[in-house]
Length: 397
Ligand code: ADP
Ligand code: MG
Image (cartoon, rainbow, N blue to C red; front, top):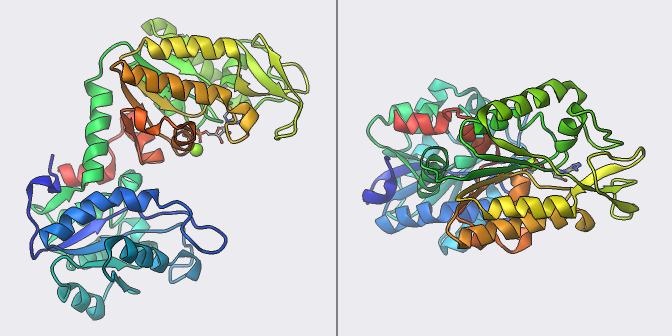
């Protein structure tokens, strides 16, 4: 793997694509700095080498094809200045003489952040001329933006071709790629995938792909109701995708043919409303009464699922078991988090990914007790679907 680890970048202008797509609160303060902190190992390594570090990033989804105050990266530059204890140079334009001059005049160990790259519509189009212009700012290119690795954009993929010899994975990317490769190729059996979340439609690709590697496929979340319905059960008001029933049937059929154990929750916690104040009841079967909707897996399912997880050597978890954002429907998800942590302690390799799943494991307090938490939601899913991500391919080729 071409990583920055073994190279000294002293005096080099290093163009680094990072994922600084952080959320802000109503006062305009960064409300979660996880993504910035995750890029710090790479930034610190380059700074201590004495490189001239030029960071490229995007924020949100600007639409106008030019500056939009709502999406400026200026607050991120200020935040970064505090962490690095040095004034981070911030440039409003990405192209032109001024930015070239700023890049060339950086001192060794100094850091510069370019304004939101998506203010240029060429970015998301993967425009070659734009990528070439950007490439002139650096002597080397580093991609550390795993969260954007599934996008074939100018700064995440196209630009790499202008650095045929000097393109590298950053430390975060390297960690993601090696862990995901381990999960897909070097796993120990039994391999259990726990898949939940709201919709089956967003998970069909990964479910199909996992049928080639796992021994156990454990299903939770709202998407289980599409499976229930496919089996002829009543789903009440539960979330259910009628147009995906045939896919659910075919997934169950394929699992059976391959000898994979597919687990569906045998009981549910149901509510008469999608809210904190809803009345709830326990339903010990797959049939959800009329007027009620399934919100979490029930205690029998929790017990079975935890046993399966605890008996596994490799575990992948994506998608919460229930509506964990509402405390009284978080139990199933929290119990799975605990089981994954316990299995890891017993020697299993555990990987967790997906925006909501990562929030859930953090909430559970077990985040530091699992082997690996992926920083990329969409990117991780596409990797596990077996796709070659443009951001990874561009560095490897
Ligand atoms: P991830 O971001 O980890 O990939 P998803 O986005 O697929 O996960 O799914 C997370 C969402 O699924 C959560 O917002 C959660 O409330 C929702 N969810 C889980 N169980 C249910 C359910 N029974 N009914 C409706 N929504 C559910
Ligand atoms: Mg999500």
